[in-house]
Length: 539
Image (cartoon, rainbow, N blue to C red):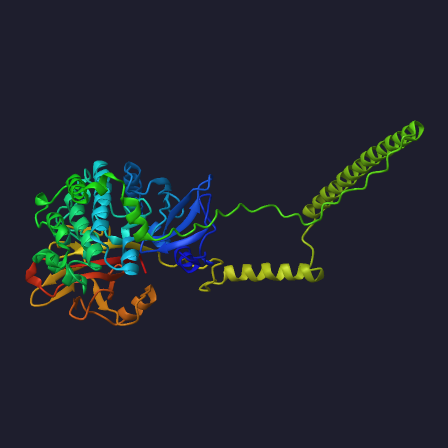
């Protein structure tokens, strides 16, 4: 790859990027997403790292920190040839961060965009590698839940599965609720799209979709609004006739509608090895990956630690010429000794003088302070004393004046925003402006209702749709809610990205930003809203 390719992969740090994170010096920016930014750094030995730094507004959310702590724990448990190893992390840092080994290579999304659909042998190698990674992930008791082409990196020796950002420990059932569908809509399994139980088989469905993407150059269930894609995933059979014939049987087993009917990761590896034949045993995979990924982009060198800069030049004093005359050498030594003795004596005398001067000055100050404290307050004398006296008098007068308000020396802090990302809202649950935000009943402040049309309604709060440009703030919500008294908002005009302001009688103001909306087909069984919620307390 040329310099232009390197510039795309390794972007220079911007003014708002930190120079280092927890002692790791940052060399370049690798990318950014909804969770935060990813940077290139290095270990002490020079090994490249990818450091993910969480966005400040998410870092302030205790619930997010708990999820991020689970992500770190999950990544520590996973070890495999086709995963990116976790090196270091701190969920309690300011901000939270984690570091994994840097994988030199494009994502599957980037590779397909650059060269189009992959040949069948490359797809088979891809499926075998990703299935082996899933075997390691599931063996550690983890369900990835967000396997997709952008989370598969193509290194020179095979694929790497990354990003356990929404992974779930399979033995932690408290997080597998029917009100929490999390993932990327285009690569969800049917049970995930309908907020059902998520298991290891859910990742296998995503593996089939990822392999189909590699073979077709696009998503198997098509493009379009997320609600349309989800409806097709839940209610229709995949169109496998578009796939190369050799791949259809295996991908069909990955995409079985019932989770228990899907193939296991171990069976995927065995099937791919059998289909690849002698190439599987002759080590033909690396050649395939080099062809797909292209030449590696040179990784920038580690950033050196700052060095001390001398403000004055170092001067080498000239040495006296040597002499072979013994008498001259003895005379020079005596002269040097006398000079040294005189210098020491002068230094001692100077130090004694300074100590005497300091003690004398301190003694005079003590006498002066005693005389001042015992004397009555003088009349205003001099400009400085008059100013101080006038200021004190004005302050006392203000304190004695009733009904006069005085500006505080510190400005009041703005209301704090509490983010609650990825909140699922359907006809069985509700959202509450107070804690806890998620309710499994219909007694919360915000409810999702569907009849002939779908709407949001509340018995307590005022609801209003914003029509401005995206990027709502507390001030824009305040302005929109002024004079509004509606407790019901029809969702016909709302779509992904729409912003909805809510005001609770307590004074709390909330902002709902719709991520996925499914209300076009109320009887389909997948009517819901997935939205990011932000609440400003006592705003």
